[in-house]
Image (tube, rainbow, N blue to C red; front, side, top):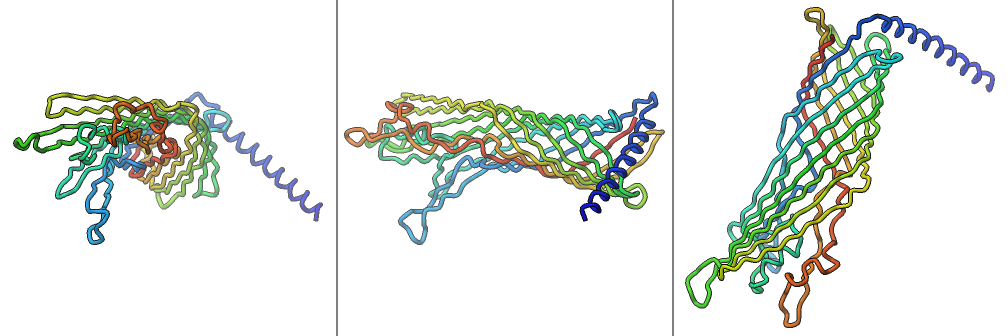
Length: 382
């Protein structure tokens, strides 16, 4: 049995050597000329982003003590719409020792917004500002709640990648072609989230007419700029159908390491009936230590090969899915720095930023962002 295994191994090695020599000779013969042929591809992308945790407010209604109409908290989120993008590819077969070389640049930008307003007994609870800033609203009005009349949120993103890949084409019969590839990928992902909350407290002062006792506005802005580079590997597959049609599929995985420049800004402004104005500010800077992003990229579609004026071209129509994990996310603070002062009155202005719990928040490097949608492309050989 051992001799049979050794014999089989030797036969595999001999066949591999013969196949390798034949392939090397064929590649050498194809690349020995002076023509530096290359392909240029342009893909039109129509993708929809899918992003974690884009809620900006919650509508609150009902009563926690009412069994028939219990307290209801309904979150309002930003839902990004479909947006266009593009990808440009420059490639050459047998660029180096039978390996193909390709350079690809992808650009995609998206942005959307949402708003919520309190109607019919509803209240607006903000989700993009620290609890300390929410509680600042009632420093001079301890008997009022800390809800708001309206809330707005806006999200923007710019996504760019640059790939440098080597590939090796393997043909199986006359219909199947498998092309493994590997190389380097650079990723740049910039995001920005803004929030705005407004409330007008209407009441009477010293038995006077109804008037605005206070007008409160809270603004928030979160910005994250991530840049990383790492390895990308995968394989593509084509199956020749009747005529010049063929099916294509591709699967790739990436692992990039980079830094994220992430920060948050909050501002509070309140004007009271006495025409006095109070303003408070808070800036948060996240650590930008090395940050790892795993990613995947899937493609599936139909292609058609043709020739015009001596140039080969390929038209393709397909579906793509891209996903990245460990993406930087919005920092949401969980605790308020407010404490009860002697006499039972809150004084957040005196202690805001001086209590340790002001830094308590969720994890901020565990988000997921993905894109999926249609791809229409044209590759032309020169």
